[in-house]
Amino acid sequence: MQKVILLVDVQNIYYTTQHSHHCNFDYNEFWSQATSNRQVVKAFAYAIDRGDEKQRQFQNILKAIGFEVKLKPFIQRSDGSAKGDWDVGITIDAMEYAQQADVVVLASGDGDFDLLVKKIRSDYDISVEVYGVRQLTASSLIDAASKYIPIENKLLLI
Image (cartoon, rainbow, N blue to C red; front, side, top):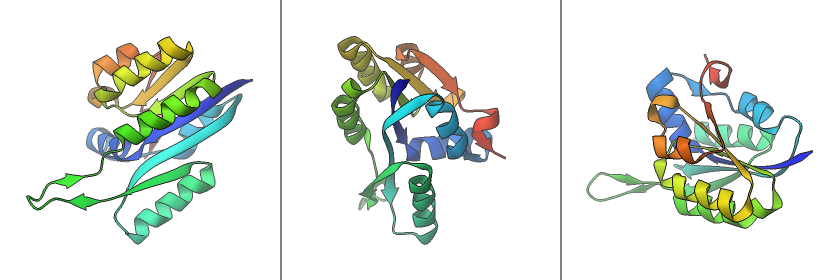
């Protein structure tokens, strides 16, 4: 049985799915697909904490599915822009746990992760599967992945 690590960039998946499909990502279906006939080593969902009750309920759903939810506070800058980026945290966890797995599953369309995916594949000689919304996933990330799975159909809550 393959060992798998799941890394989900919650903000990226939320906004790209909303923008492209006008609905939500089905985390239960994702879990089912990504872990089928596999042993889960680690499963992280990286999110921003706004202290909102609805968000807490969503985080509890993620925990019930099997994810360890990692939170960063939402930061509103004085110029009105916001910061809430998990790229470094995802990268650190990926590098720390990849050698314990046969497959790393990354749910994000962020092209910044193409270097991470290439590094994991070359240094640990393991597969990296990327889930993302086709129109909003960087082509460099799709090209770097061992396998790309578009977020559509069964992966959407319609």
